[in-house]
Amino acid sequence: MNKRKIFNDPVYGFITISSDLVFDLIEHPYFQRLRRIKQLGMAELVYPGALHTRFHHALGAMHLMCEALQTLRSKGHLIWEAEWEAAQIAILLHDVGHGPFSHVLETTILPHVPHENLSLELMKDLNRQFEGRLDLAIQMFEGSYPRQFFHQLVSSQLDMDRMDYLNRDSFFTGVAEGAIGAERIIKMLDVVDDQLVVEAKGMLSVENFLNARRLMYWQVYLHKTSICAEVMLVQAIGRARELLRDGQEVFAAPDFAVFLRQNVSLTQFQENDAYLRAFVNIDDNDVWSCIKMWQYHSDAILATICQLLLHRKLYKIQFSDVPFEADYLAKISQDLQQQHIPAHWLSYFLVEGQSSNAAYVSSKERIFIKLKDGSVRDIAEASDLPTIKALSNIVRKYYVCWSKNLTLQP
Image (tube, rainbow, N blue to C red; front, side, top):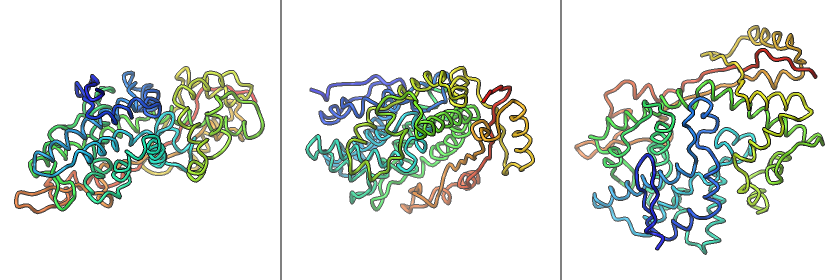
């Protein structure tokens, strides 16, 4: 029986599969593809251990979902077997729509289609293949299921997705500050008026969770070296797209070339399943094979960026709390032109951007604390730590990346 299968996870130990349907979904090519998509994009250039994949993360989130459901059942909340299975499936497939390099290339390969929308389209396709057995899971994923706490377990500011990726990313990068007490938080979960809440005695663990999330963003997800590598990868893909659309020959696997040649909309995905078929055939390997081939391309821009990326000769980066002055950017531009980079090529070797970090946005889904008197309050109000209120503020940093010591002949 499939339900006897177990996975040995480095973070949680043994993860059991509770139903044949869940096992069959894990075995499906759509889900197996996640083995070939790294969780942290280019972070391995900073943290050598950050080689874990979306496959690992999805299994871990599913495990935490089971723990949460068991906690809620133990506190007297009725959860049918069908709901239990559906919640597992919803979290298991929540990232199935991620493309190569996860978030890094999301707005480059598919500029107008968030991965959540593609996850939903793939879940609908799987539902057709499994003859409607994912109906309930899709409702939970979309948030249309009447018992809203199921959707909150899948997608909220204290969901099983975030709990797993913080623990897992902390584990594989070695950034200890990202470790959270996920097990304690889950044990403190409850439901009041169909809303997910945390018991008051778990408030310190939630505060630690929010602080850990903020630290992980600055130390891992928005690390300056990761940003440089991501910028270079985006520039390489962008240049390849320009060359292809200008009629030049650029190496790419056929399915990957579909998304390099055109901006595919969500409507196109929904109306023509050829796009979905092409999407589920691309992963990190397709991009790396292109980068390795493009380093020999006759186009100096594309070849140079790919060579630098492959050899980890990354751009320099400068951060600022305010937008950069025009004079400062002009000085960098002048220096680049002295390296024989024509003015009309500068946009590939001088890139401006900004990053933002907000650990807790109370204007969105809120984290509620169940006090001892039974009342429910937002954690920003219930906590006596001023830092929790501060975490609600969005912190923005501006950056500029540029190449150094580069000689490029047009």
